Length: 180
Image 1: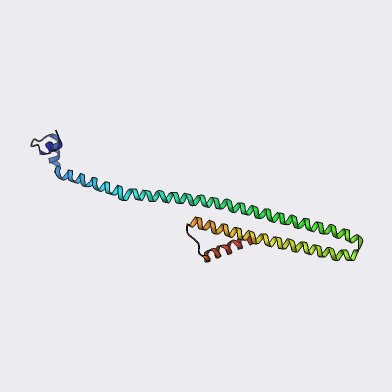
Image 2: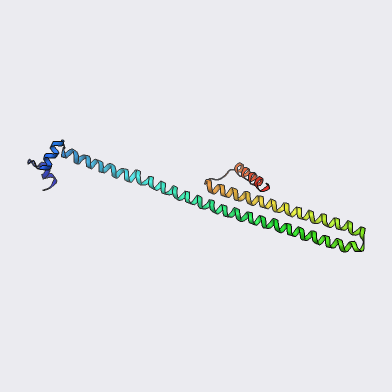
């Protein structure tokens, strides 16, 4: 028996009897079911799926941001290790230069005591100045590298391009942290 013959049937079956008891109008019920199906289809296509797509895109961007942050952390740690190695090398070089100057001063002191003393002081001063210049140069390079890494990290994490004022402020903060 088809639905139309079932609905149009004058005979009252057990289903028809229960439906009549609860006041079911079959034509209204079917039209409401069709309307509900259309609403579900439209909401699913134009609301639910786009929202899920946006949420998936957000999750992807957050994961990328976290990956970039981790990469920046490793780069920063690497830069700090390089800076420490450069500073240690500068200290070793300075110590080597000072040691060489002291050895030269001792040899010259055996020949000419007063002249050797003056020359040794000049060599030591030059060595200290060279070490100071080299140390200053390395600190400046380190500050620039750290400032660049901070700006790159901030740009990647925030996802926006920093203004000149933001970059200047971040560079100054990074320089203060390195100097401390």
